[in-house]
Length: 478
Figure 1 (cartoon, rainbow, N blue to C red):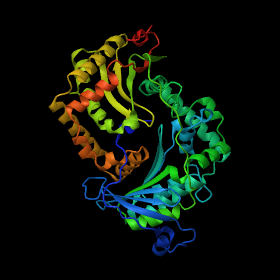
Figure 2: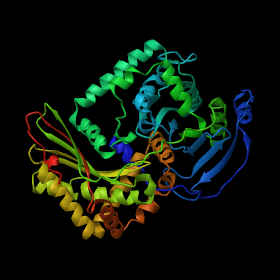
Figure 3: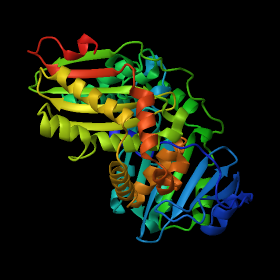
Figure 4: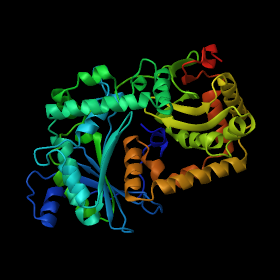
């Protein structure tokens, strides 16, 4: 899982904005008129236009809610003859049972392994033959599958995606083959210290909760997952109320909504609730250490935030993270890398989840300098929480974030990913009104939110250190 992926487009609570146009449509009847298909079993849906009147890369946006609970989000844009279809499900590693840890990501692999209508390999052949691309991603709280094709072929994208979501075969030989592929992925992560340090950090950040589990799962839980387990998991999690289909690009919105109703009419209604748990307040600094045959130290540590429960704070935390550790002019890069020569790389970020979040720091450093690195970061946090940032720092951070958002939503696939992630995490308004909400962040808000989460608070830390290094700075408990 990419931290950058997890950080993008966070914060905000849902509210209905813009003009609301509500009407009932027989989706399959519309599809039959447009495409000559039968209207038997038609779904109905309600439509609303979100952020009407706003200007931006993702607005205005049309939202349709179908009678089985499925949501469609369509951003029509005719700047290029390309369409992305991106299906999102609000399930991921945190939504799994302990005994099936890793099944969300494992299913992502099985998604491409065939149905009765599209046997193994045919999805790739069809999409690549059209000059398109297809892929998927799994995170802690969501999974998504997307296809980007020339606009005249978007119905093919809907066809292969919906078929794989509802009719994957899970043939035993394919399950065994992909099980080994996932295990190889785990081994690669373990051999990559910059990736493994996040796994170590997770265990300290959410002890005793689903947040401590790695997205890829464990060898022993992967070994227990079979065809029946996949079908049970799919039946529980991949229900209409847990899903959103995002379509962006060169399309006619009315035609798309009718087609989605046609292709997803067999998706079971209902939803699977998010697991109930709380992330405990850290009563002391929690430090985990792993050792590898490496010659640098890798550190990830952070302070627990409210995450999506206080989603209005997360754009402010984005600004704080940019001031602290985004780019060579950031406070931490200047301090740790340029001036004190404690690190070769430093980065700050914020990560918002449903039950908690993190204001975190990632540092690559020379072994033996762990104590000095942590002390320098804590000193910078103290300064930011007491004195606050300057107006110039805040404006610079906002400019960087606006540019990042613009690049992120430059393509049809980027728009679809941004919209889908924001909707699935309950932060859609912060996408629709991104500039407006970012502009409202002030130096005082940055100072206050950093103080709230770091002043007199304990932190979680993961360290990956060289084998020959004895002891660790984190063990002293700072």
